[in-house]
Structures are given as C-alpha cells and as structure tokens.
Image (cartoon, rainbow, N blue to C red; front, side, top):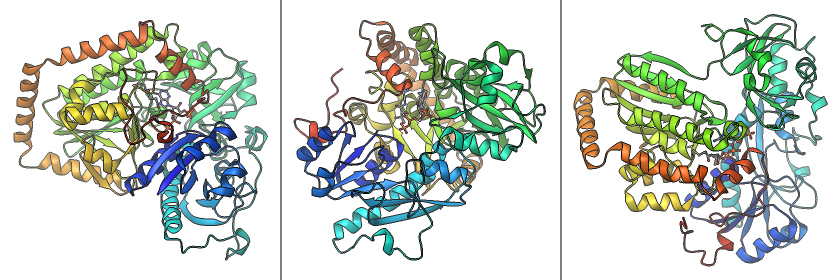
Amino acid sequence: MRILFITHSFNSLAQRLFAALREAGHRVSIEFDINDPTSIEAVDLFRPDLVVAPFLKRAIPGRIWRSTPCLIVHPGVIGDRGPSALDWAILNQESTWGVTVLQANEVMDGGAIWASETFTTRGASKSSLYRTEVTSAAVTAVTQAVARFEGQQFQPQPLKTVTPPVSGRERPLARQADRAIDWSIDETSAVLRKIRSADGFPGLRDAALGAATGKDLYLYDAHPAPTLAGTPGTLVARSGEAVGVATVDGGIWLGRLRDRQSDHNFKLPAVQVLGARAAGLEDRSQDEADAYRDIHYVEREGVGFLHFPFYNGAMSTDRCERLLSAYQEAVASGPRVIVLCGGPDFWSNGMDLNQIEAADSAADESWRNINAIDDISEAIIRTTDCLTVAALRGNAGAGGVFLARAADEVWSHDEVTLNPHYKDMGNLFGSEYWTYLLPRCCGEEQSSQIMAARLPVGIAEAQSLGLVDRSLTPCRIGFLSAVEHEAAALAQAGDLDARLQAKRERREHDEAQKPLNEFRAEELARMRTNFYGFDPSYHIARYNFVHKIPRSRTPLTIAEHRRRNPDLPVRDVS
Ligand code: COA
C-alpha cells in the first residue's frame, strides 16, 4: 500500500514505524505537519491508500480525513484523550499503559479504534518510556491496524461500543502547577515522578531551586541519591556533571538543567548551568555507594562491560576523554572480551551538539569534540589484545553508529533504530574513521548508498547492510542477559586466541594498505571545512537542532512524493 505519514517530526517512533512498514512491503512517504495546505498538497501528490499520523500536535484537516482514511497513533489506553497522555500516566502512577490507533474524525482522539496495545510501565522519564515501551506498542498496534485495513474485513470499533468499560478518559494539558514539587512534604519517589513526567519536554520548572539560585530552572535527568541529607529543596552536593538536592527522605541527583533566562537556554550539565554555586558544593564523585555515574565498568568471567549512559547519548569532549581513560584502563586489566554497553536509551548520538552550541567558539569546540570521539574510535580499532563488542540496547545516530562499528562485532535487538548518516546536520562530512569502517563492513557501493540515503534503518535492514552483526533478542527485555551469555561464550571459546591472531594480522594488513592516520586526516580536513569554512550550514543546522526550531519543509530524502523521480533515491550532492 501507499502510506503517507503526516507527523510533527520524524521522531524515534515515526522512524521505527517507517522501518517496520517498509519492511512489511509498503511504500511510505513522509510530510511534516507544517500547515493545512502543505499536508493537503502532500496527499494530492502522493495519493496514499492510507494516512498514518505517528506524532501530531494538532488535528488533521477535515479535507484529508474525509477523503482518505487516517490512522492516529495516540500514546494512551483506549478512551484516553488529550495532549499529555504520558505525563498523566506517570503522575498518576499507572502500572499499565498503552497505545491506541484511532481513525481521525471531527473529535480529537475520539475516532473509532483500529487497534490497541498495552504495556507495563516502569520508573523512567517520559522520553524513555516513549522511545521504548510506547514505540514498541505503537509498532505492534499500527502494523495490526494496517493489516486490518488492507484485509478490508475489519470494522473499527466506535469508542462507546467498547467492552469492558474503557479505563481511559479525557485529560487536560499537564501544566507546571500539576507537577510542582512541594519539597516540604514530597518524598524522593514523588519528586522523581514529577520530574520524570516532564523529561525530556517541557521539563519541570522548580520555583524553590530557581529562587535559591536566582535562575529560572527546569530540571531533568533525575536519579535517587539516598545518602544525601539537608534542608529539602536545597543544593547539598555535586557529583560529576550532576548536583544533589536534598529531599525529606534523602535526595536526588540532577544531571541536566535548563536556565530559561540564560543565553544558552537549552539543556546543559547541571554543574555547568550553576557554575560557581555548584563548584562550592561538597564533591561526592568518589562515593562508591551513591554517586552520579555516567561511566562505569564491571568485569565478570573474563568479560569487561563498559557502560556509558550519557544523557541523550550525547558525547561531549569531556565525556569522550573520560570514556577513553576508562576504556584504556579496562583493556589494561586484561579481559578477553570487552563489551561497550552505551546506555539504556541510547548507545551514542555522536558529538554533544548542546555543549558545542554553548561554547565560546562553536567551531573550536566542534573540532575538540570530533577529535575526542576519534581518539576513542581509534583506541577501539587498535585494540588487538581482546575482542570488542558494541552492544546496542538503545538507538544510535550519526557518529554513534560508526563508533559502534569500530568494535569487532555489533550486537543489538530488534527494537533498535539506527541513523547511519551525518549529512542531515548541515551537510556534515563526519569522522570516527567511517571512511575506513563502513566499506570494511558494508562494501564500497553499499557504504555510499547508506550515506546518501540518510534514512533510519531497523535492525533487520541494518543486518543485511552489514551495520549490525547479530540481533540477540526480539526486544530489549532480556537483551543484556543474552549479551552477558554470548560474551562469556566468546571469552571461553577455544578459538579465541586464533581470532585475536587473525585480528592482529588484519590490522597490520589494513595499516599497510592505508594507515589509519590517513583516514583520520582526510575526514578531519572535510570536517575542518564544515566547522571553519565559508558555508555556515552546519552551524545553522546545529543551532536549529539545539533550539528545536521546527522544520519549514520536509527533507526530500523522506518526502518521496516531492521528488522529481520518486523511484530514485536522493543523490548525494556534496
Ligand atoms: N547532542 C545533543 N543532544 C542530542 C544529540 C546530540 N548529538 N542527539 C540527540 N540529542 C537530544 C535531542 O536534542 C533530544 O533532546 P530532548 O531530550 O530535549 O528532546 C533527544 O536527544 C532525543 O533526540 P531526538 O532527535 O528527539 O531523537 P530521535 O530519535 O527523534 O532522532 C537522531 C535521533 C540521532 C536522528 C537525532 O537525535 C539527531 O539527528 N541527532 C544529532 C546527531 C548528530 O548529528 N550528531 C553530531 C554528529 S556526530
């Protein structure tokens, strides 16, 4: 079928659906929901059998849903309505939540039901739930709804006829007052819940911390810190990039803050936003039991597991330098296999664009950042004493994908999405040794196609392209255990020494063909032009990304209906 997505943005959920429906054989094109005439024009151009709206902030124009069936993905259980479905699910401590696929009509979220799916919630941020449980439920429900539509037998069920009685109901927009923290009575669990209900967007605006610091502060990336103590609602410690705030029964670490009055009014590390105030706090970074850790290493049965759960997968210069030290230390401790685990939500999304945007010289900071990531990539490529595995629990994008490919093997599960391209960020050339790594695993021709296509890929496609070696589980549940099991088997395998010998020989052979330094120098020459050259595209794209400026048109790479020859992929014009 021809399926048109009308969506506010091509976010992680839309990307997974795009990959899943294409894998199911459908032709999918995308139009951003910019205004009614643009959406109507997209429908006229593409003539879809079906419109799917994965992520909308406003209603679909009547002219579209009256002429073409439109399926709306609502991140709530049957009967739930309103713009803050997940916020309320977290605030109300719903243990089960869901996704409903409804047909668009004149009542927002009130149309007949094509499919629904439920899931068990967990104590995580709204974004984390959205990217994982909601997205997986949406893939199941939309796939089912599309199959039902195609089968032409199914009658979507009007809400009022659903039995047993529906659990959801209409709820208003969740406002700051609905989640305001009362530090004098809220226990840690309540504080975490309130912050998580607004993380990543819009963030919880906290009056107490704001008043105490003289800043208009929004709080993100909250974790329990049971050993902290002090006057509730006050800053009591720091640890790495986080600050500790006391609660009535302990405290929390806050990894990210946003100061709305600042020139850099986007999310940044908490210690950076608070500056001197944070510097004066007691440093608990070395506290074994209760520190904010964005890098940690454990070793079991000859296998080392290096975790780096960086917020939003963003790898700043400092984070890269600390990760490189941790990696070198881990290798020196002599494991047979090292598993690079990334974080639960993201493996890596490459350079930290927020911190680059906040730097005095964005060009200089970009240069430092890309060199710091390259240093990690190089260290992984040059590791010949042990096998290296990148285990992707969460998504990876841009430099993060190619950094993973520096490892000997890349393992993942079926719910991961990869964005193996740089050019959407203002035509960035990219580095991380991709010009060496990509042809090595995917072949020359396929490498050029991957880079030019600029499309997200699901894990089945990533495997067929050579970007991923193995998918260990159908979903994220059980993935880490499977990784532990498989890595232990690798470490104990009788042929490990032979594999390491082959790896050394291949490295020597590759080095003789073309030294790694040459790949780096060539890539960085292109990156230098991106950062310091006359064309400001990268700086503009980064500014728009960090400040979340909505796109004014849909990129041709995904808007097939706007291409002159839709059957041809978009050509790389750089
Ligand atoms: N630096 C800083 N923040 C980043 C980031 C990066 N490299 N990549 C993603 N983020 C942030 C986003 O701003 C967003 O923040 P929020 O919590 O305020 O909403 C969050 O991570 C999730 O990203 P989002 O874009 O909403 O996720 P997605 O699944 O829709 O898209 C990507 C994933 C990877 C396609 C997209 O995030 C992206 O293009 N990132 C930039 C990649 C890049 O160009 N890196 C630099 C070159 S190496």
